[in-house]
Image 1 (tube, rainbow, N blue to C red):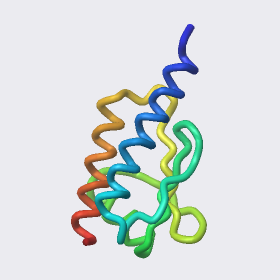
Image 2: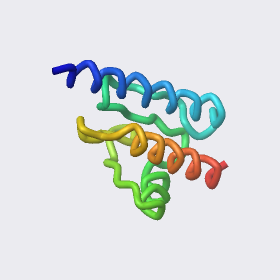
Image 3: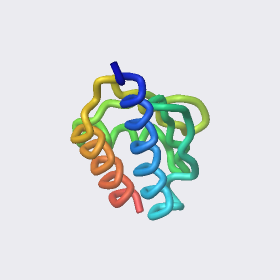
Length: 97
């Protein structure tokens, strides 16, 4: 019944957590963009390297335009899975800084 409300809330949470990483690593992530759970990270480093490191951490992403990494989790993603993704992204930022 409240499925879309939950999706919207998860998207807001995910974007908020990604923005925290952006603030912590401003030389790695330049912008968090997108709507809902369709988000992108504009990286200030080569996105292919960032994606490779995410894959090494068992996280799949898609390369998009101009150093953007597309994050597109399923609508049924759990909060724990979003937290796991955030941790993996932060780990890669630490590795690249």
